[in-house]
Image 1 (tube, rainbow, N blue to C red):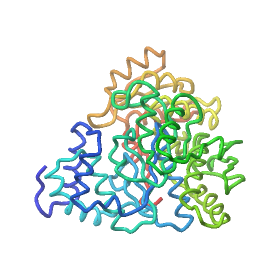
Image 2 (cartoon, rainbow, N blue to C red):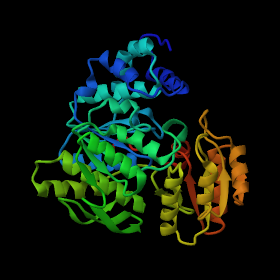
Image 3 (tube, helix red, strand yellow):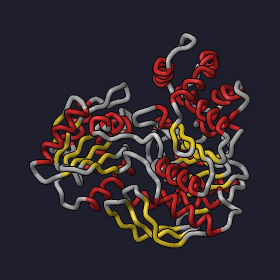
Length: 436
């Protein structure tokens, strides 16, 4: 881990990525010790913490956009990144600059060498220090994994948001919905507030019981706010939104009925964050913020022939939402699917779900140790009776998929992993904006 003084940003980031190969270290002791060395910068700003199996990144993006529309100086922390590490850390929508990141890494490196944190602990410490130095009004922070033991849970958020609960990361969070819900509920703090998107079942019961025990007031989607009459158009998703301060039609540029849900959760959280302001100003911020949200690779359509849709769906809940979106966008259109997954994902079940809309599958793997070998994907696809072939990399898979779709008046879908999407985007000429 030793890096010479004055090492380049690239060199330091290369070393930082090596931390990712070490096992994740659940628990707050490591990050607390690390932040204590810097005088606890995590206590230097108010925050909203967002957990959930799916939708937490999109909810965070909507919320950050609403708060900026209200005039707040915001910090946004999300993970993982698509192309650049800097995407994870944003101030007022602008990702951290290379000079600022280089300065932070130089300051923090001796602490990293002393404490040997995990990659996510190190990234979180860098982010929270940057937020404190930037004197933000509010941080919107996406939980990395789970909640209770995630490094981000070192914060004492004024509002916690839990988007959804489904099976994912069972080896870490537990095999049952009840256990997973208990881990996500760990972000609810005594005396804090909770915005809950889980609408029914034992997951909601577990989370509500935690909120009662911690005396945390709850706003429920479906009771205290709602959305409906969603309609997908090329420009995004239109829907009717009802909250305490907002009632009317609004459009998010993000595609998918699930994005209406994510935007509604963001609006409910924003109302608490902006409490005390005149209601008309909150109403304007919600409408304007939702309408100006940007969040790449979430059902993002690249125009042309054939059109290509990129999405980061990587579990069954995400795959179901993606199938719904594809059916609404391209009913009956032949679809070539480029798919690749991380090793720990239920790729057989996800491929089966995508088989409801996919006509031809091109199976591949992204670079790095996380990727599931393409041979395993082929076994699953054959078992699901999918028309498929393998490709050595995402570039080859996309070329074959586009050629197939072009001769049939079809379209292309790329899905299965954030890492797959990030690897594909440069070759497709898609940029991740430096400013959202």
